[in-house]
View 1 (cartoon, rainbow, N blue to C red):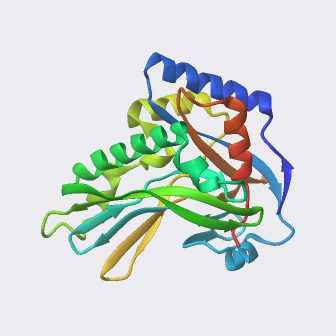
View 2 (cartoon, rainbow, N blue to C red; view 1 turned 60 degrees about the horizontal axis):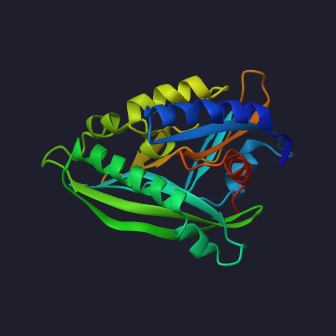
Amino acid sequence: MRVAAHPERIAYGRMFDTVMAGLRRGDSFLANLTARTEVECQCGLDTIFRYAKAPYKLLLPNEFICFSPEPFVRISGVRISTYPMKGTADASLPDAESLLMENYKEMCEHYTIVDLMRNDLNSVSRDVRVERFRYLERIATSRGEIFQTSSEVTGVLPEGKEYDFGDIILPMLPAGSITGAPKEATVSLIGCAEDSPRGWYTGVFGYFDGEEMESAVMIRCIQRGDDRRLYFHSGGGITVNSNCEEEYEELIAKVYLTR
């Protein structure tokens, strides 16, 4: 895969300014701003699907591929868990772990999403608690390794409801990690800001093996646009502490294939 055309910095700046204006008005505390990068693939999407290393993969032949590192909801018996992922750093940087874990903006962003996902779980379960907070994961990519931070939030489903997947998941959509908080107002703000459709990107997908249900957030996606060109979609969380140039560079850094 090679990049044919990154999003224009000026165009991204306009989207960023729209989101920042909403944040300063108090419409949102955190908004996930995304854009698409035009890419060219020397091989088919099915080949990328076979060789991409990711815990969650999905392929719609010649149209769409997702190789996601982010779980959405896991259900095992009456236990439900979600794993919001927020915070990224280049693992090759000196003291990369400390830089990420001690970054004030990234910390605030993560707190906000964990609180949002706690509220989402509270709408469908009881005894909601944060089992693990802001743990590091190392991910290998075609551009080198990166660190990402995640948390684990769990709850207990009502007896007899553990297989009612639609009733459980639909109230939690869209996923908090790719929208923001408060969710409804932030989705509206994102709709005003973003200049290209997300398509399947940032949806969810999953499977049920007869005993456990596992789902994932559709990040790290390549999909074919209406113009039949291929686009890699990426983004990041914006807060009032965000810097436009740094957020643009993070968006670009997330255009990669896993390996």
